[in-house]
Image (tube, rainbow, N blue to C red; front, side, top):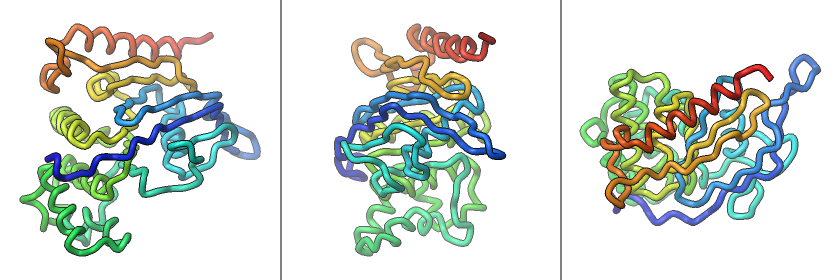
Length: 268
């Protein structure tokens, strides 16, 4: 598994004085308010909060899809001015091309970047193996389950070898058992690759299970109201995914995150 990826660049994400608003019907609608945040290289940061609090807006600003109204977003000291191959995005829905096979979907970014054919094929093979889709490489996306389609999307993003992976509720539409299985697989992939991950979720349980650090945002305009380390250990070592939910610290963190979300929704 470790052969499937290179050692990532160590690129911190730095957000300073970030505010953003949209213009709707001629009026400014605030989305984010004065966010200061640093994401260290290799962290798995989960971001939870109520609907409409600006989670996806923050992710899009990090991806370079939008420019902030105020403040700065930078990676390794360089301002984010647009999309970059160094930042891969996994969307809520698996944005796969139905006429291409799983293999061709995964290698698409490499093909567009004109990566050498032999390297392209090898990296595609490695990442299909990484997400457990080797036996489905020649299937079309519509022949796969929803969970397998999301695995394919994750493989396509990782095959491009970004340093930072931005994930916008990628498991939100899946059934509970598939979601839990993919959560465990994603943790294994993160531990194997060492990527920096920002993962947006509405699920308190998912935020604590996946994150090495958990953030909670207030209702719009979004502010960071909770920032907690979530590195859970057992017998002095990082706990295995199938043991996490039984740990007292997991339960404690889950309640802290839930309380922060509920408190933010109470009338002033």
